[in-house]
Image 1 (cartoon, rainbow over the protein chains, first blue to last red):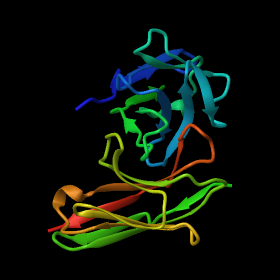
Image 2: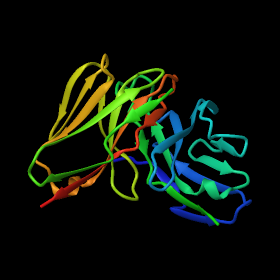
Image 3: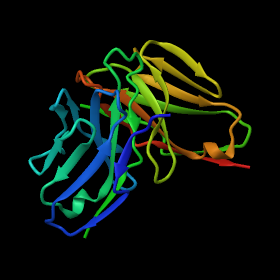
Image 4: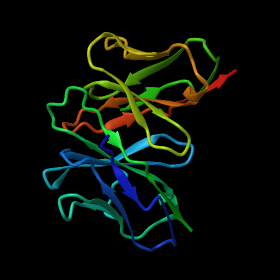
Length: 116
Length: 111
């Protein structure tokens, strides 16, 4: 069964450093998402991406964040200058065509980001 | 505003039936999802409701009442492996399907 993959599984970085989280969505999917989940809290939407551009973003997704689909398979989330409060599990998700009646999003296994 | 409420924790016995409720108040509604999340893992899709009524899928059923802003997930014949968090999520008003999640209900299944 096709699945979303994410690398690395765990990233430790120092405050102020840049990090790039990588995702490979399911190959025929067209809509891509990043969510985050701070330990013990709810899953929060960050950004959605379609047709090579951001389609929606939340208040969390400020100028420190950016997304890119550099080569038609990878989907990356960059945090320019990490803060302690960026420590969380980051999930990538993808979805098939808009005509998919269930709008089901498939989630990757997540990258745990720890900012020290 | 966006608000999705679910009980924080529930406990049930193996073999029993449990109902997890979810109420929502969102600025837009384009469907309600239930996801299962084991500790430290990704959410996995369980069910989707966009019209009122009951959707059944094996041991899991989900119900929606749009007029009441209410849904429940029903789990039958509980197994130990069903111990997990169950996340209620609403597809927001945006066109690209982003999900607004509740805080999740941690279900513990006891022998």
